[in-house]
Amino acid sequence: MQALRLVAGGLWLASVCACASTPTGSEGKASGASEASDEAAEELAEAQHELELARMELLITELRLESERIERTQELEAARERLELVERKRHLFEMREQPRELASLELSLDRARYSVEDDRAELAELEAMYAAEEFAEMTKELVLNRGRRSLEASERSLKLREEENRIREAELVFEEEEHARSMKDAAQDLEQKERAIQRAELEAKMERMKAKQELEDLEKELEKLKKKGAGA
Image 1 (cartoon, rainbow, N blue to C red):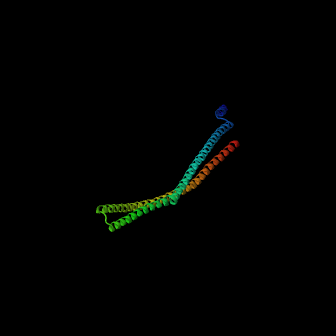
Image 2 (image 1 turned 180 degrees about the horizontal axis):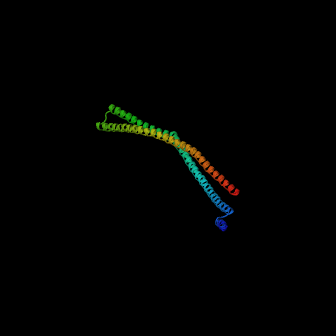
Image 3 (image 1 turned 90 degrees about the horizontal axis):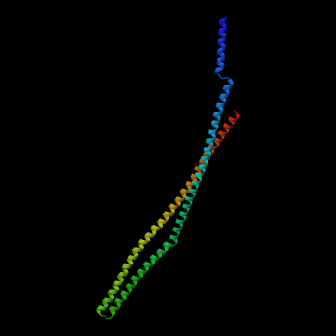
């Protein structure tokens, strides 16, 4: 009997010690709930931080895209102005400068031809006059040589003028081609910038949509976390 009492006493003592060293069920639950609450609060704070970052990134994206749009618009306007300037220059060249210069070249050539014809006629007249009348041989040769030299100079001047005209006419053709090429290049540049703007607008639209979608997803996730925390 004494032995049984000793055994019973030992079991009771062990039970008391166990109760003293181990927290109760309610205390364990409270501790677990506190830890879960801390984790939820930390998760909520992190979600709010990510949302703020997403909003800032969206704002930065909008500012960058607007700056790029303004820059592209300015480049497009500059390309239009260049094309208009090239068109005006070509029109001025074809309607005024080229015809006027060609007319001037033709006039100078005609004057050179008239000079040759006049000198040739004058020399022929002198030769006829000195052949019909008696003059001193020295005077005759002096006058005729002067006429011959004048005719020779006029003929050389005519050839030089003809060569200069051919060169200038070739240059005018080259200038006309240059104007046409400049106009074509300016038109192509304008067309390329117009296509680049269209492509950039589509890319910017897609970028905005992605950024806004990411922001909406983060907002939804934050709302879920808030509801979850309120329900807990």
